[in-house]
Image 1: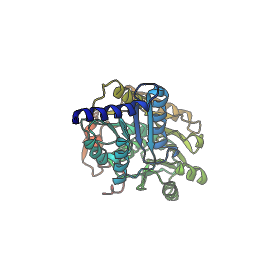
Image 2: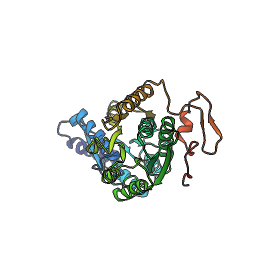
Image 3: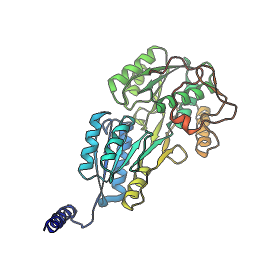
Image 4: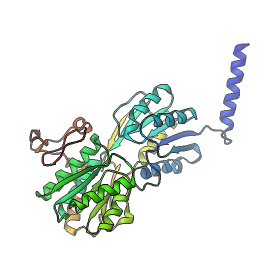
Length: 359
């Protein structure tokens, strides 16, 4: 009797599930957890472009859902749990601070696949993925070092995590190569997205003499602050930010998540999804370099594009020795390149950068 009852309830449940799809096939449900608003013009905007690309690619076969402005920490765990309870088959958690919450929720939902951006903790149902933004930072550093007149380059850091430290080091190394007199000033904003804080950080750097400002935060506020100040150049972060071209924004790093999101959704649909770690750069197209405007001298533009090509082909690695650590100790010998493990956990500045990394 109990068995019949169970089977009947299961049949009813199944009937309800398929009834939800009048066309008779089960949709794959893909969720996205966003740290900022989809209209931030930067990081979250590009992840959302990836979500829209999934919808365009698979049409009626998928349903996507997203929650924006989700704080890193316990609240993100609640959002992920709700997505899983609501039937998501695949959930992309798109900020570093979602790492532990993703692992925690994944344990409770072994049948749901999770993809965490920029983290390093994996499980059977948790993959990690990130882009080699430091490759783009090398190109920005080259342009910045070539164009600064004050020799002071400002850098707005979000949080002192390896991804951000790598970017600062890469930009500095390449600015220094073309301009030995260059000095970096770093302001930590302790936010990914807060236009007011980001604008304040940009203004502080400009007051300190910076005529180039780089950012690892997600809003266009630093671009606006630079525009207001005049004679300051900037670079788009995560997204093109082309509304500020040809100046102050002279180029950008563009995160192109769409091909990855499409491939991972397809893997869930055809049953081939496995836990993997993906770290792609300019070569595979995950990192794009936004148009270098004519505000950049032709010769510098040519050099920057040549640098982009040599990084894309693998002929050149942005972390190639000789490079010392900030304390003067040797890190990479002449011609030696950094290994991914060291880069992934980078917690030191290279020689020449002033100031300490906040703990």
